[in-house]
Image 1: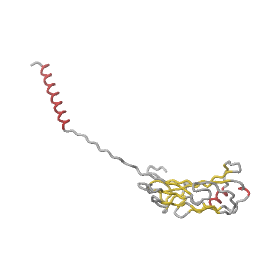
Image 2: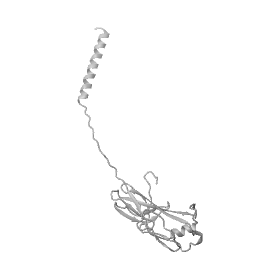
Image 3: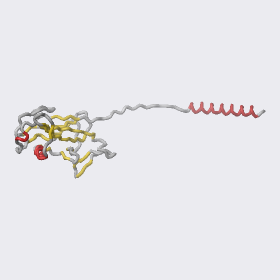
Image 4: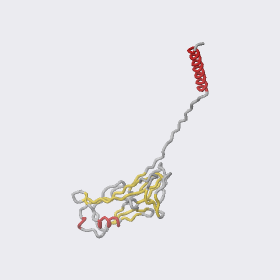
Length: 197
């Protein structure tokens, strides 16, 4: 037998063996799939002012005088279908002149207006300007930030005819798998595990 025929026969046997092994391997393999549906939870909040004269969702109160008490009760609601959450709120003061242009508060005016807002128990003002509520808020719960604003008796002609706004915004983050920064028993920041806030 010459070398060429021998080589052809050996290659043929190797090919037949490979096909046989391949067929055997195919016979013993299998495939299966499993499909899972994962539904993420969510946090859902709202903010209302049930006793504010201008309306539950904001509005305008006119003819204010020094020393007047304005019912204003920003209330954060963690909705019934929400996950339990930590909440925080921020107060923003805006002042408009007689022509409707935004102007700056003097430090004294801003301090006097803020002094007329008594924050309810359970809230802590942190260095970042947010008021943090001290504990997890369960779904279907309402938490009030404050309930009135007392206009400074020291204000006079320098604010006559001016308008101002006390805007309150609120944020929430799910309580599960989240650990806020706590100092002296009060929440002082929301920091994620990567260090961002």
